[in-house]
Image (cartoon, rainbow, N blue to C red; front, side, top):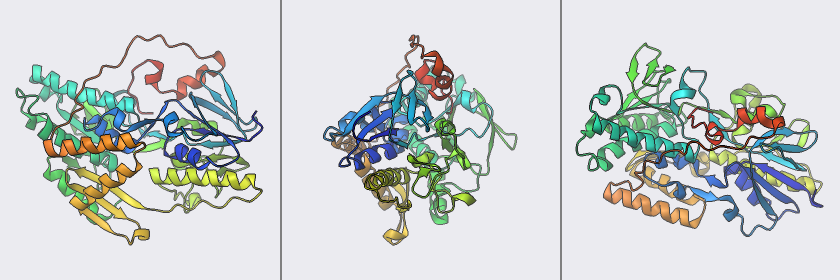
Length: 454
């Protein structure tokens, strides 16, 4: 153990990254652990899946972020268990890492809500690998339909998105633009008007976090642009060749994109503490675990909220994770100085989403006078904000150039079909952690190639 306190951070998402940055001047040693060596800007994964951006545009190497932070170290690994009493985290390779303070920020995974077939047949957007897999699948469906028109009747060109939150709406808008603007020249033998985008939502409106006027605007624009929006349409089964609705309707499709909701990482269940809605961890006002002031849960994992006992939790958004990471770091510094921590207060900045070219929605919070922008202004606001938060100057320039190129040429430059690598013999983890690894490590990292919802 180092002479200085060691702060271990699990997860290189928005929360973990900002916690580590906030500790740069603290008298501690920081160790960040993640299964990937890069930070993924998840709000733009759908643009990788629809060929608007490349994976390198929205990811940045973790070590590169902290070149100048002398008290920072990074370790590539998957945390499979946490021993709060021994103050250690257990990695998939069997190693144990000791900590004085722990900040758990493993993020969220998609929730299938127990719908049969989702884990086996749906695509999700929670990682670069999955976004690239979805992009390759979409383009492969077009290649198959170009060679065999009979596949169109079987749903080869029907793309069903389940869940009309920001991810679902943005994905639907990007897909129709891809089919209408970018791909007709690639596939002169195909009538691209036969490609269908169906957006299913169990509730009676799209974009639940937004106001009624914004919801109506988004729905109107989606319909005008050719998206088949189905409200109050819950999915009861996902099949390899169709989705089944509660009404009994069966929609033939070979592409189901699941964006219906999230739950916390399964690591939450390893913390051996009370879980709230969505498997979120109950925390003290300062984001530490009850009875363990040296362990913090932030971001999607945290069960913090204006009234957590009544189920009113802060949304699982990037801003909540960013602010939570900074707060946990500040609390650790205060504890080192012998001062008590302060309650976490989330400062809502508002919500943003885009439906496609020139159509965006920006609803700012009361801190910004409650300004609401729709249309071209909302679209510009969305672009500006995402450029600010993209990590790395090169990423910002690359994304800006790609967006400008796409805007003026109607083209998408990342139209690549990349086959997943198969047949790799992965080394077996030690016997003591094998059951945990099989549960917690994504199947793609175990070499199975499944596209299940985690």
